[in-house]
Length: 355
Image (cartoon, rainbow, N blue to C red; front, side):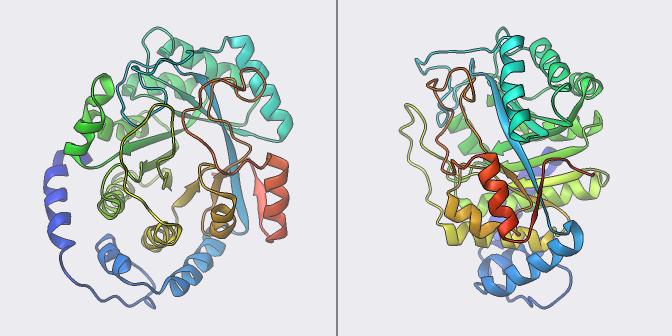
């Protein structure tokens, strides 16, 4: 497990970051230890050209699209940065199976074939049985189903795979154990190492697609990027027969969240993305609608997985459009509008993964 050596890795990273590095951007392959030199090199134009060339080689002209589907905002966790945190006095909602079908039908008609299920953690209102039954229902509407939920055991992931689960998105939120404890006040999610081990449990259960990331802004951004690099390197070496993605979500405004966060400029975020993409040319970069239209247009061709036509509230497509959002989105284009834009850039939008 990656968590077994996390303290040693963090100590190494904090020491290595203090040094100065020179890196040759013209070399063909980059290793995880090149992350320091790549982050210190500001020739983003050369990096971008190399990344786009690699993407054409490994992914062709395809941009994979998906849409999130929020099914419950009940939660027993105390995540200080989240609009769904247990202490927030919001209208709690849990979609019925019939309502899930209605939301699914809407997304299906929009042209979506890959759906990402999201839910808070609650043993009553978003329990395993509810998640399992939701996946079975959604198999009637979508070719590919992923989840972004609370941590599960290997046995439970195995059951979800038999029901039709293909992918798991799970953000560590922050790779700093101290910051993690600070922003997760109570609830099952408070366990840092359990969270860190979850993607490996999912892989061992047969999940074919894994998406990792940190919630950028919670802690020092460069530290998070470097730790993401070492985490991905570990996963690729130990579980090579999985399709991987990396996400770079910047924290956004949410209801009753007053924390102060680190700021990450668009240019700096692009630098982070390019650095990791050079090290991991076969790994997808996933950019959601929490980013602006301008940014998502600029990153197209570097990012190869993107959400479209999204809402971040339960039942937000057809049922409860005024319900509390987990966070605010920036790119409000419809699926069709975004697909049309992708085509103008000579890329091919698809919602079916051929992996």
